[in-house]
Image 1 (tube, rainbow, N blue to C red):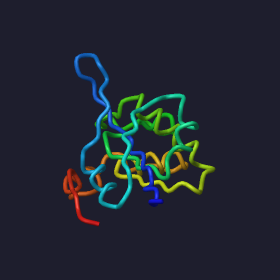
Image 2: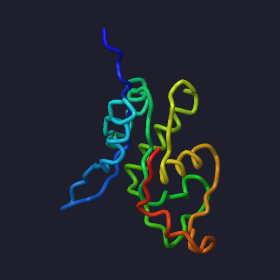
Image 3: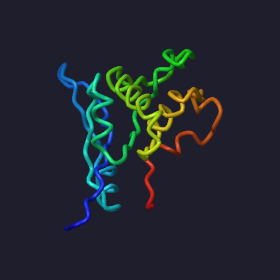
Image 4: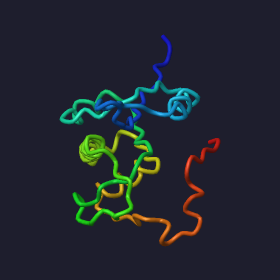
Length: 146
């Protein structure tokens, strides 16, 4: 019997087109999971279903995106932030909260994903890198081999 390949959830980003929310992901994430031997599954925001979804996957990847809204975590959002859509943030917050007690499921956060992991765990963010890092633009659209 063949070895089962791990099922890896990849959180989807959201945008609104013609008043319709659209979930999507860059192919870089799916290609990377495939290259590592996993089976990628794009996970659109489905509020209220975090607990039932977690048990279906062997690992989760929280992808990059716009800036998190930090008021729910006790800090004002920077005025120049490009705010992530509420449905995405609420869904990923619920997933990460449900994962807090699940140390058996690997989680990878990329950019926004890592920021959300930090916020849900009680951390804070440097919300506007141009104010503190001259090289802030160097991180956009960067990829590298692993």
